[in-house]
Image 1: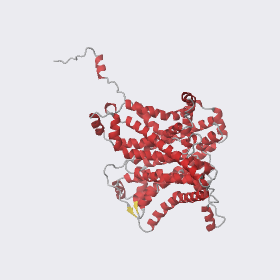
Image 2: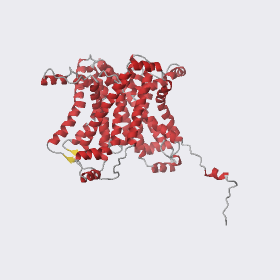
Image 3: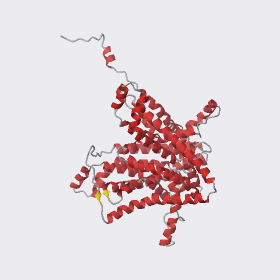
Image 4: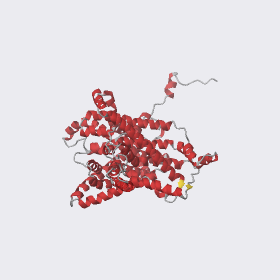
Length: 567
């Protein structure tokens, strides 16, 4: 008997088979704050639609060629040096064992606690021609001895490399630890030496992590304007600050900032391209870990002297100099003067850092929770989800560029807001604008930690709570947050410290009359008041040491993904 359809007409088949696409309200809720975070960057990108030929012609006739050349050379120098230092040190502490290796493994991350603008002026005072290092070398080697001109491009590369090599070290260390002993055993069975195993097996497997670490170092290099100014090196970032603050040429500063943003995005795309084209795979699961090789004799001495010498130059000597200056400054200051100034600036810094940490992590938590897949909506609205993840690119954009983008966005709204509030609220040059700038700059840090912790919460727990009638807010507070507390606390701490050290966003967007430790340090160091700058500088360093050590723990299981998410 032939089966016949009960449908009255063929068109009904298409209507029944077609499913109406589900609307992902969570993705939309995440996309709204993400779009607000992207607005300053979008505004700067749109300036390329209205390029001013006269401005670019003037820049090209004056400083633009020198800026481009110096920026390129600076990034090449810092990239190569941080790659060599970070990879070598990571290979040493993961492949070999010797007395003190565990302590050295932790200590090698300490230079990340020294911001470039602090390490820069301290290193300049130590290693310049009249500094104590060259003075002592002339006493030993004769009066004609002289190092290279330290206040120059090589000096800036030297300082930034010391400050930024931990980015490569942390990721390379995690990558080497994740590799399997079976792969190296197979290479040895094939007759490869330890050196050949490093170049032909371990290094290719670590290529994605190395690319991410170098990209992070290059982003920080592109962001810097304080170190290059100390060392008389004209770069694009320094040029933006000079045009905006000193020369008051706002149009030229915005045009230059847009170029800087495009370069930063270009680095991100190149890094992603390099990693996506990698075709090296390593064994996962519960593979046998690598047994470190025990060193003996002169090799132990070499393994100890190299890292300890680097730590002495990059951290020990600068901190000792800061401590000496700070003691001298406190002893020479008039009673009550330093205490009042320092107390006010410290309060401003801590209040802003704490407020920024809570604000950024709260927004990151909202976005991550809204994007959590739920049932049939797991694959809906991919564009909105992409937009939410795109908002984390703010960390890859130089701080000065982020600040200009925020100013361009908020300035037209000032008159409207002032009229609505009776002149009581100002968006730009206010705490509101400053927190907004911190959100754009540091959302990636908060989002990466929160999202990684949220992914570890199994959907079964959420489904069980929902089946008992719990609302989404109650599920978040009673189920997710307790299980995510470690990741959330780590994100809070990292955003707090990065805000504590942040210079360009704070300097551009802070309210009139509000000073912080970072701005205070930079202003004093720019005027060569090195001793006076030691007190706030040392405070920033001491407040950053604990989180710097935390980075070692974060570089263990799962930390590689957290760091790469920043890009």
